[in-house]
Length: 319
Image (cartoon, rainbow, N blue to C red; front, side):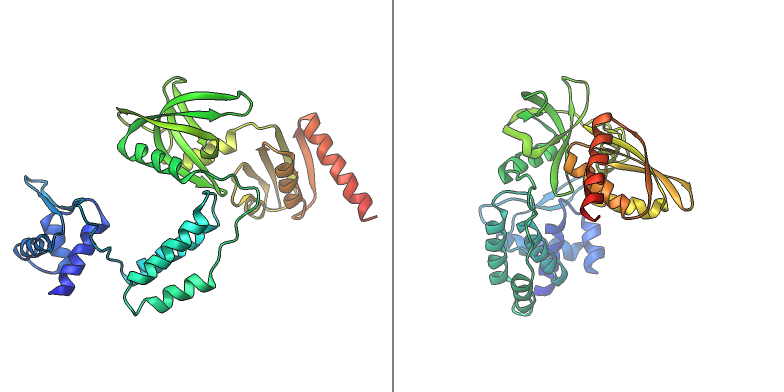
């Protein structure tokens, strides 16, 4: 009996709402037994809320006391690894907070899981990547809440080229790519979808007005983000013909997807990419050059001169 109650509690914590039939099927009991078990949880001060009607069911409400969080073995290790990874990410102050949370998690886990969690905490460490912009966890929390609640949000945005502007948008989803955080939102003032770097967002304020979510012009948010990067025109744009298979060249764009690779034949391809810094340009060109000879088909004069100048310096350095 205690084991089934813990399993029921774990199911209620795993998603917002369950029907009685779904819970009965998962637990291998009758719906009447589910109702009795729910009553037992309520007697233990767990705020299980029941809804009526054809779509009625059960959900775990918020109460004055936080109920114990039930995690199975794999979930506990997944949380631990996530905390270790967060320590090396692009969110400011997360290293100390993640390790503190990991220590608290170890204290409340069953004895059989503590050695595994201790091994993760002592043997795994995420190395922060230098130069990655840090975002405020408070800003992320507000934006995430507004995305979930379909609530309009206002903020100051440092667009660099256009200085700081006050924006009022309909937030859709937070995304992370290449260790950077992005907000995908619809901007009514510009009547179009926009992608904002979260590290350039400040003075976030929910507008306390709800909106009806719009249909995204892409299969999903990650696809929209990647397509936006591949079609954007940054300061340095270049087209190359590379004597290497397209699949091999595509692998060089892992992490920050801003390149388009099109095969010419089985042993060569055309690469088009656009980046906003000379350092990133040279990094991509150098990675491609390591795969095979290439020809610059198109580039702005500044970009072409930069590639030629660095190439000549490398040639002189190695005689």
